[in-house]
Length: 108
Image (cartoon, rainbow, N blue to C red; front, top):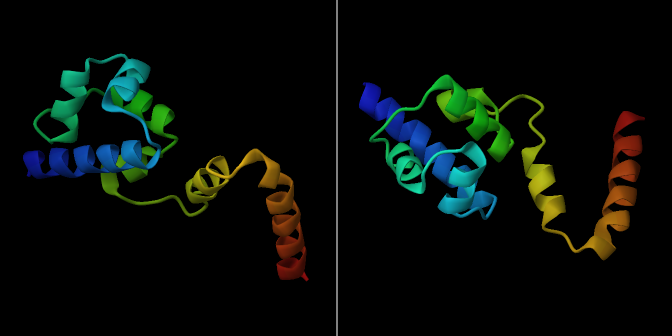
């Protein structure tokens, strides 16, 4: 059971890291662990402390509910953040105008 849980947690960390286009080395540096230890976590071979989990959540902008349980928060805006962060800067004002118009229309 514990190994399965570690594998699920590790897989979610790896997927989220890859979605954010972070190398294993960069994430390991951000959370103050070795790349080898992070690899062990991602493969489900090792668990991690709550302090490391906290750092992982912060570095990946993910909730602990998502990392541990696989549940996205009800108001998880991560997908919007990812889409906007991949958008060329010159198009951000258009995206902002579109969202404002959409929100006004929905709220009427």
